[in-house]
Image 1 (spheres, helix red, strand yellow):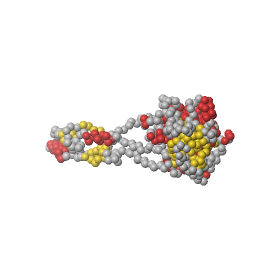
Image 2 (image 1 turned 90 degrees about the horizontal axis):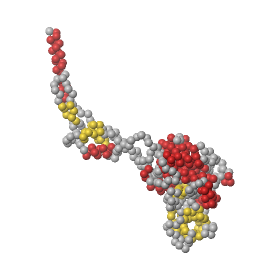
Image 3 (image 1 turned 180 degrees about the vertical axis):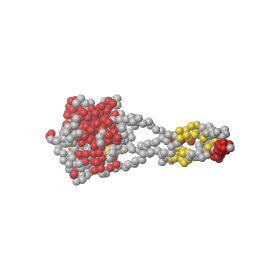
Length: 500
């Protein structure tokens, strides 16, 4: 049964005043953007002034009949009351808890249409944009720090009978002023997995297969099983692998959910080697593999060991010489972070050839081998939305995956060159003494090396020259011809004299 299609609401005018269920009025400001089925506006409680660009609140608006915002409202009202959040922070000795603060909700009418709205704290840039601006990856240190902060959030919402169901970079945002703080937002696909303390039963439902954002959704969701705590941790593991390596093994088959499920199952079956090899031995990959191995042991209704999972990621930070409370830094300086393999970096052979053309040198050894070039991959991904088949919730914010896979390897030809004197030819002459014979004094001979075919790489750049073997000239042939005749003649004379 295909999910019901929700529609985007018609835009509301800037300056419109809405009133929530607590009789508090809010003035709409500039439209900030839109999700899959909702619009987001700046907002401010002082209705007598224009909403500034620095407003600390946002209002999310959807058509009244849409499901995602209704599910999100129920989550905030049941599980994310501010008093409960503050108690949790204090009892668990946390600096903060990355759940946006909820301020109110209500309904409004405009041009004969009904809308539902929700007011929450305004947040900053989402992790998806930061990842894209950083070449498709995040530093290993940032991956571990964000992973621990997300575990803090998941532990809280799981203890309050909810799962998120749609963890991804687009739903993780930085604080507007303190960029060391990250928040998990958008609870439109949240699900009450344990109402009144009774866990939902494991039951595969073909009508609800592949629920969520297909790149990151859990294997249970692929089978139509209701979301669970282990499903949230599995989704987080996929996100961390994507942040660390910039890609996922199934990203080429997103149009075929069954193939995606098979690829995910293979990744888990081959732990830990599958994660280490796929990530290209990135720093932190071994700890991520260990994290995933712990998650793989969970049964559907089992409570995860959140403290043990955090210790794995904290150990990774400790091995990097940093800590959870250090600054969250996302930059391009991480491109060289690899586990040591003992292989030295090879130089570009085209640089050697350029020097050859500038200087007149002698080629002692050359390699006609062409470099092994990785094929350039070009992908055009269409925008995708998360699909929710539970609680009348169909989809979520738009998501455009980004994969940086345009890496090319160059293999050196290991050309060896020796400077030569004044020579005008492209390939200089080879001066070599002839070996000595017992006939007459030796003479030097000179052989010109023929210029072999040039070897070019796919871009047309010269790598080196292949020289053919020198042929003996006429003088050398004469030496061989008469050099053997003299000893033979001397032997014949000696035999003749012996017989006589």
